[in-house]
Image 1 (tube, rainbow, N blue to C red):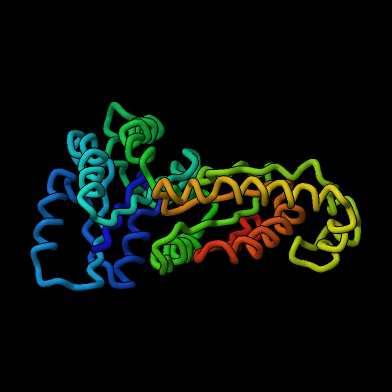
Image 2 (cartoon, rainbow, N blue to C red):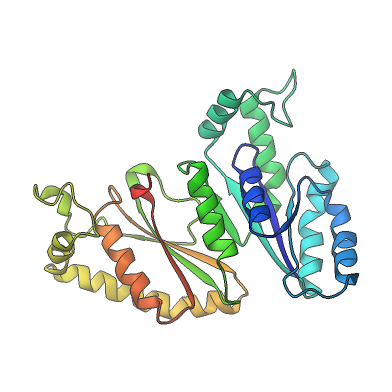
Length: 286
């Protein structure tokens, strides 16, 4: 059996993630009380064996407070019993969530006449903190469109064909903020910046001219070698700790030149070491 728990703050895209999983063959239940989870798993396990039994469940602030509080303990017990359970936590920056609620005119489950929206979002964050802390994968949906979110969930959850750890190499720009889903972050802002070369400014790290510029500087190769050495030393330890996902974020100022180039180099290299290596260039997402 494969069990996926989807959680996160309201407005972060949980319903869209569950719909995607349902589209690809998961049996989905939204707003299931955590106290009923063991009984549901037992009933499904008692059915005639099916190799590809897959369940996806939504647990969030709409559940009773007691259910949310006991959810981490219930999930730990299921994992200890041998159930393959992934916890996916979706979130977004509070101003983005406020804007989404304003656009849809929906009511937050924790808001009332005495609790305004931003206060409800902060309460929800505190309530769900134990689930966020135990999540195998945290996705920041602030800058993702609906289609990008569905593609990301499909790639990182559904497309995980092997039982080994999935590794995402993600480029980003510091001026747009550090990705909240990053497990390891490397800063390339000390490297020569192609942005200051007029003919390279509007190109990206995917273009041969930018790659040639960066390779011409020895410090680029030094940085690449040091990052590879660190990851070769520590990624196996992450995998041995039963992590399902690790996000390696590579940042530069704008997220279009140095970080993009380095992500491509690292992903190509580690594709020979791990079965599930993925790439995302955050600042190039449309």
